[in-house]
Length: 135
Image 1 (cartoon, rainbow, N blue to C red):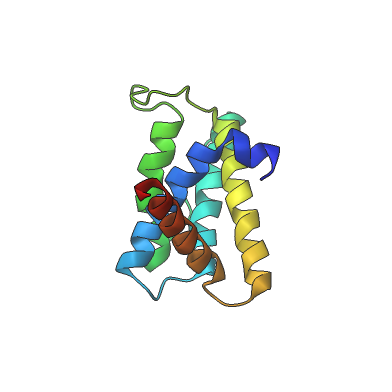
Image 2 (image 1 turned 90 degrees about the vertical axis):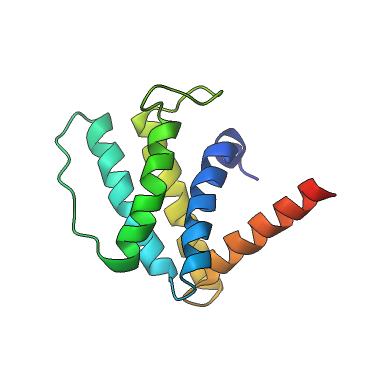
């Protein structure tokens, strides 16, 4: 793993768990739809980090469902509403970078082939991780 992935492993995992939940409910979900949701979230945190007003884009269907599943997780990770997590919250800029890393992962897996290659990868990874914890 990269140093970035090591540092933000918990945040990456929590976001991908939320996406995996949507994928479990909607097996027709595609990497492109997840990328659009990540992009919208990254825009939100970039605006916050640079003190600009955020103007939400228009997400529909599964894009909106992924966004709505991930947003509460990202908000918790940045310490809202009241930093109820046992870990130190990340900044808005760090969250933007985390979302950028996830978008990069989508592009990497899409090159490997398929409209759902990233989703299949995270589902397999999360399944393997859960199995490792059970052993």
